[in-house]
Image (cartoon, rainbow, N blue to C red):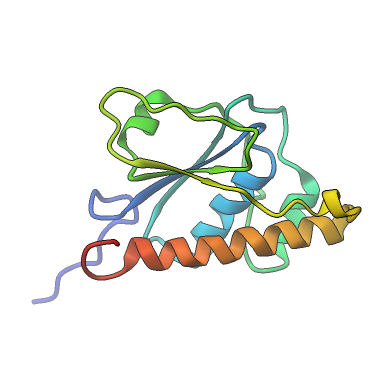
Length: 152
């Protein structure tokens, strides 16, 4: 008798919330990349500290180049109940600040992501470098979240 596979959003799946300021670029990219890489093994969310009105089209375009999908993404604020229950909160960039809430189950980590514009790199080239930096971090986090045994 075989056991059915766990639901992608079962309590056994680790959960993560990616946060940036506007929730239009970096946090959406991280969420889309994690969903693509994790294939249902991780419950993925994204939000913004001060959400903008739309997802960055160039972010969506460069993420699609590597097989991730942001086409149905919408910007949203942080939900306190979600923040309290996820296993991990990853803040992308130093501008967004997430304060812990009472009873919070997970930890907050900040990724100081590559910012090619500081080197004069703009447009699609900039966005691909940002994507690649985030993708590298997402892959490492996925390995950590889904590794057998206790996380170190």
